[in-house]
Image 1 (cartoon, rainbow, N blue to C red):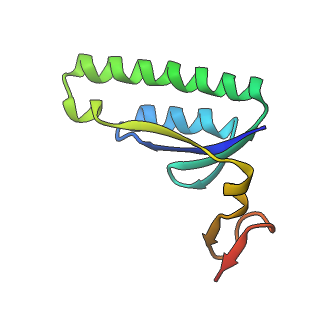
Image 2: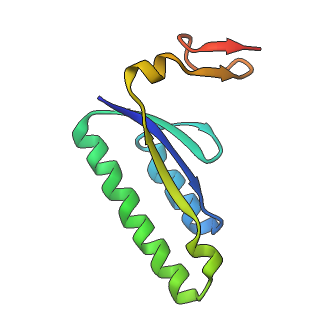
Length: 104
């Protein structure tokens, strides 16, 4: 299984909503623009292809619109090993996985 986090900074509502819908198919939303995933290799590869396809479309849109600010936005994927996941510390109020360490 491949585990990680996807975080994004997309200001355009259309593309931000499209990315969010893609990620909802593969990952769990933990904050507005942050998703956690744990996927088999083949599903992970499909997620990456879907994200790349959307991002290419987004960059083309921003370039054609002549909006430099749009071009500076990003999608980031951070991979986490099992040890890193077990060390996470979550400050939250009543949400999440019971194996997470909560400070309320």
